[in-house]
Image (tube, rainbow, N blue to C red):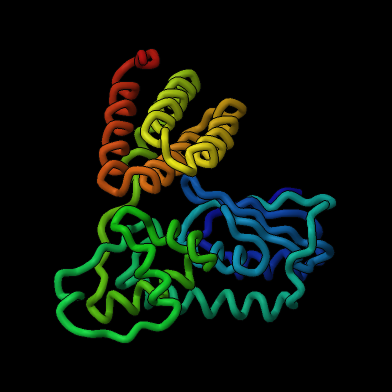
Length: 282
């Protein structure tokens, strides 16, 4: 029998504990806006989890700090790799600890979708940075979100947020708004045909902007992979992945200023599509 509800009413660790003690086998699907995660149990033991680019324990911890969203537990046999070896007790204790820690982090880092930017005060006095802080600073280009920086340095968004929190406290960084936040909402108003049309325009423009770069072929392959996902499942989330892949490629090939101009152009295409009942022309 399926079991569903809201994370706003019951935190994820409590939900997992409730299902685990009953020895059930099945999987949780957790949805928070455009973000989705899954946690798998076998005879009450949590054996695997996945959320975006994360798998295993880190995926559980990231899902645990979501303050809101909807969950659905579907009983049934699971066929997934075993990526979690910790006992449920140890896993959920760590998840609860991170929830408490996130309450502190959230005072200065309300979302891992926000973009770190340099402060004017940050360059006025010498500082000593840890390796983790230096890794974040090196990839802070005032365009990439905390999540994107986390991916670039192979850390979880939570751990990266902790580093950013320290850099904000030290006065080196501040935060600007959500990366591409407005795009996601407007993409949700487009039809499947419009989303596909938009995706192809983005792909063509990115190919033009990255032409001649020594990594142009690699850029094209990366973008093409996300474009294929849109062709199979044209959703706002899949198109967002295309936008992000194309932006990274343009930024690498032409620099952050051209990447900003490219994203501005994409925003205009989205607005045009959102105001029309048919896809905009090329």
